[in-house]
Every structure is written in C-alpha cells, then in structure tokens.
Length: 61
Image (cartoon, rainbow, N blue to C red; front, top):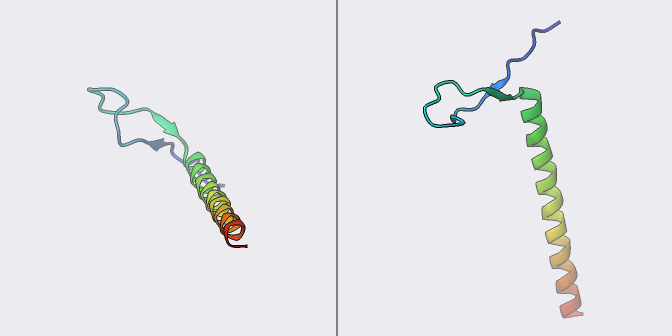
C-alpha cells in the first residue's frame, strides 16, 4: 500500500505577506483537471472544425 500523496501547494501566495500558502489541490484532482481540459479542448476544436467545413460546404455548393 502506498503512502497518501501530498497535497499540491500553489507557488503563489493567496494574500500579500503570506509565506506558506495552504494546500488547495490534491495531485489526483490536478491531474483530473488537466485531462478534463484536454478533452474539452479536443471537443471545442472538433466543433470549430465541423462548423467551418459545414459553412464552406454551404457557401461553395
């Protein structure tokens, strides 16, 4: 059994003068956010590409 993963610590302070920001995002949650962004970016690209192809088809046919 593995040890629990440490929570991600942001390199940015949440407010002026803070030296140790609180841990807010666990590594698993951060990876999930990255994969979610990846798939949403792919879907958005597909939507834009299909819209452009359909528009081109309507204009030229």
